[in-house]
Length: 254
Image (cartoon, rainbow, N blue to C red):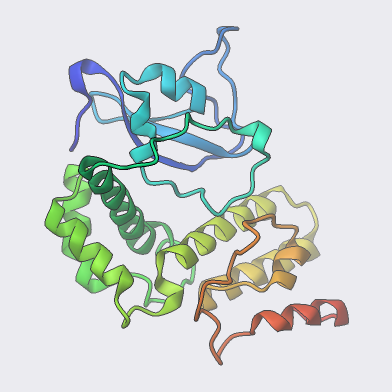
């Protein structure tokens, strides 16, 4: 497993956390702040344990704050008010070879983990999500916490291959993971039996089809990226096309 240098922290990913989670660091008030937007940077200590940090706290904990730009981001398709999550300093416009390799590594890790772990763990998800050709790489990644350059190239080639269905490409899997997290939160917070049934029916639909319509998202009250579930080619004959979102007004969401 990749370890922190000199007993420090290493950034692992940006991910969703329970909004009730507390930051591992302490702010100026010496109190642990929370994550009202449900997003955090996950840092690993020298012993291999992972902890959530806010953006400012993560930068303060790292000897090289710029490394936060090189971690996989699983929250990219969420919608967070700009004032709620400060922007990192602008990166140089021209990337050198090392930056390009770091970006490819982050993209490969994100795709690998989305397909083999995060989306694969959605209850009743279609079995095509978990890909046997990635099993060995995923097992090695779990042991080491890193990928070799050849593994990065292999993963990205699979993600970009014409034989990979559009719904199993990175952007759509991010949409699925984001919608899954938000539906789970809404179900846990709801006190209405009818609403819980409705939300669970949407969750089952998402698991079976790996898509949701704009009407379904609106009916559930889920805020996502404005282009969520609009990636090229994801809408096939076995699921509703985006135009079916209009059925929500006539009482049908499926």
